Image (cartoon, rainbow, N blue to C red; front, side):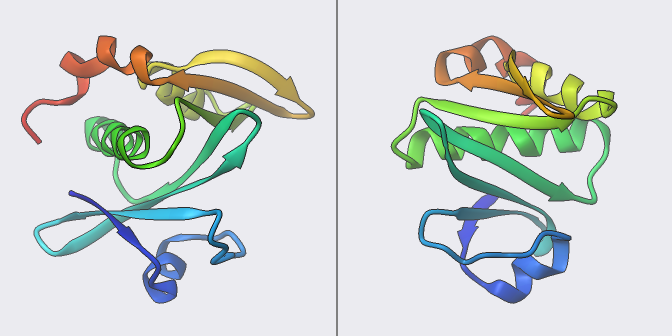
Length: 132
């Protein structure tokens, strides 16, 4: 289950980032059976939001979690575009971005950016929903 949080302790538990509790950054936790499984952060970027994630999930579980976080963001935040970013050498994150409906948008330095639009997610529904 994806739920929004402003609890700095929960956010800090998962993140190596210097956490900024700015009102512009929105944090959601993935919680299942009372256990915190990861955190997703959304911050303003270009014409939409930029997603960051930190989780201990693997494989299909992380794909389901990111999809649920993106769904939450599209339904809750006033945006129709979400970007993800991966270092050029991080094929796992690039594959995840594409699997979540993202299309390569641009590069900046050593980073590759992917653009995910709300309508792009409809084609990934069968891959990720699985009733979870």
